[in-house]
Amino acid sequence: MAVFTPVTLDDLPQWITQFPLGKPLALKGIASGIENSNFFLTTERGEFVLTIFENLSFEQLPFYLNLMRHLADRGVAVPAPIATAKGELIVPLHGKPASIVTKLEGSSQMDPRPVHCAEVGAMLARMHLAGRDYPLQQPNLRGLDWWNATTPQVLPFLSDSNAHLLKAEMHFQEAFAGCDTYRQLQSGPVHADLFRNNVMFDGERLTGFFDFYFAGCDTWLFDVAVTVNDWCIALDTGVLDTARVRALLDAYHAVRPFTDAEQTAWQPMLRAAALRFWLSRLYDYYLPREAEMLTPHDPTHFERILRERIATLAPKLF
Image (cartoon, rainbow, N blue to C red; front, side, top):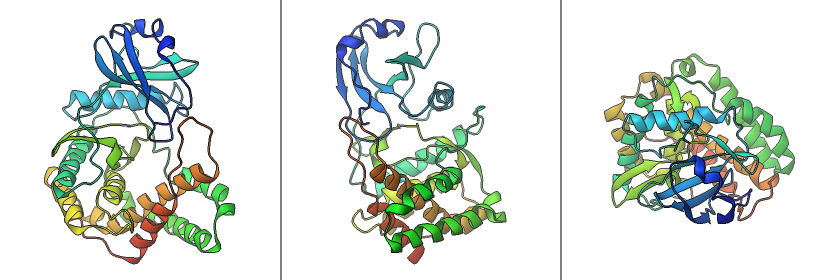
C-alpha cells in the first residue's frame, strides 16, 4: 500500500531475528492503496509481505490477523501470518504495529471475465462459511456509524447536486438498516474490500484473497455487494455486466445459497456498498494524509456507481 512509514533494509537485520525467516535480503515498497505501509520482503526463507499499520491499533489487530489464520487453517486461500518465536503475530517496528504474512502466487486480474468472477464468488462463499465459528467479534469499522461521522466532514467540499445525493442516500440507508428485512440478513466476518487488486490469480486459477484490514462482522450480503460493484462493472460507467454478475452470484449461491431476505435487500445493499466507497474516497481525496507514493482514488467513480444503482435494477441474486 502507500508508504507512510519509510523502512529500509538496514532497519531489519536485528528486528527480523524474532521471526523464523532468516536474514532479510531485499525490501521494496508497494505503491498501491492508501491505508498502511506495505513492502515486499525477501528473506533467506522466501518471499513475504511486511505491513506497518498506520490506523489500526495493537488492540484492534488481533481480529484481522487471527481471522486470516483461522481462514487459512480451514482451506481458504489467504496469506498466513508468520508468528515470532514467542507466538506473536503483531510486533512493533518504528513504534507502530507490524506483521509479516506469506506472499500469494500470481497477480491481480484487472480485466476479469466471467470465469474469474465465478472463482471469486465461490471462494467468497467458502470464506463466509469458514468464518462462522470465528470467536472474535469486531464491527465493520467503515459501516453506518462511520458513514454518519464522515458525511458532515465531506459535505462542505461537494457540489449542490452531490450534497443532495449524499444526504438523500444516507437517509435511505438509515431507514434500510432499521427495517425487518435487514435484521433477517445472515452475518459474520466479511472481507469488506474485495476489489480486483485484492485477489490473486494464476491464469484462471484463484490463488488467494488478501488485504483483510477492512474486515469486520457485517452482513454477508454487504460483502457480496462490494465485490460485485468492482468485479462485475464497466469501469468507465459503473454499469453492471450481466454475464459477470451472473457468474459470480451463481457460483456463490452454489456454495452458500442466498435467502429470500437477501433477495429483497440486494438492490439497497448494492447502493450501500457504493455509498461506503464513495464516502471513503471523498474523505481521502479532500482530507488526505501525507505519504510517500500516495495517490488518492477518484471519488467520482463511486458517485457514478451509486447513481447507477439508484437508477437501474441489478440482476437478481437467484
